[in-house]
Length: 83
Image (cartoon, rainbow, N blue to C red; front, top):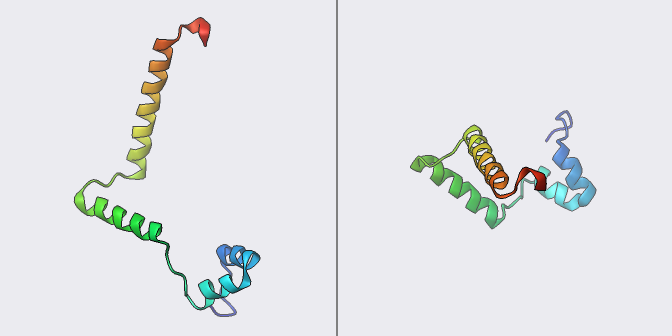
């Protein structure tokens, strides 16, 4: 970062939490991903290359369908006077 670069909001959050952490991450680029981040990135890449990747739009469509099924099942189980 130079003096003219805008300050990222994440840098302000890191500064408020720990000035040392802010310096390590934003000035020295000494941030190490946690193992869960690495696993997630690897899983995402595997899904994309294997053809199993689901776009966010498709994921929302699947969620809407499953919610509609759950609502239909709920109305079948309980009479309208019980809702």
